[in-house]
Length: 342
Image (cartoon, rainbow, N blue to C red; front, side, top):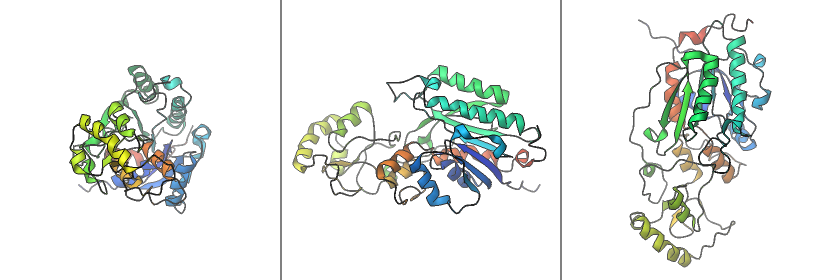
């Protein structure tokens, strides 16, 4: 039997960020006819433009609230990670969930999926993947599942994956999809220490990558108290100390270094101005999310802060690529005749 030819597909990526969904599709070996990117963040758009401004298959379509499916016929796959701001346990001040000002944008994705299913997909299959934080409460998990089941029926299922299975950092996420036969990725050996440029780390896997980190002054105390952020130590001897000993010795090292946290201090990403630890660089942060080297770090005219924020909001590329592999050779994807008939 001849292998099924890999068909090209039309993709609608909502809340697209820096287009990690496209990176995942490319990595999975899925050909793209058109990639429609809904995004409004200026830094994310600058990163997109750096890579895809000359790509005729890549289309920036603006705000998710303005997306009308009549403009994007024959969509085969919708992929999105709607804002987790009021869903995440990190946000202790506002856990209003899907009623929140940002997280309620989930319902825009539901609107779009509903319209695609109703008006375009009578003769072919519409697939979707949704990603969001695993720390959301049971109520919101069930609500998301229910909304998706109202559109796709019993095809919908949810799977929980920690990116640390195949990436050098923890990132616990829930994935809802109707792509059949998706399984949790097989673990591979990939450590935090594998991706750093210099220095030493004490953890096998980095913490979940957020849009912010701790400071270079007394951030080490917050790092251990809240298990927040990632630090890379200058000396192996210090990295090997117990937490208690680190916190005891660090103030003396900081004082001796003379570093006082000046915002305009002239030091590079791989320097240790406090003579003890540094934070991951943009390049290392890319690697924590399995984003290819230079995809964000090489982009000009975007600040380091905004680059790190964009990476922290992204999807783990290799995880999504594994989930998407099941779409290769799907015969249902290719049937486009009469797809727009109402």
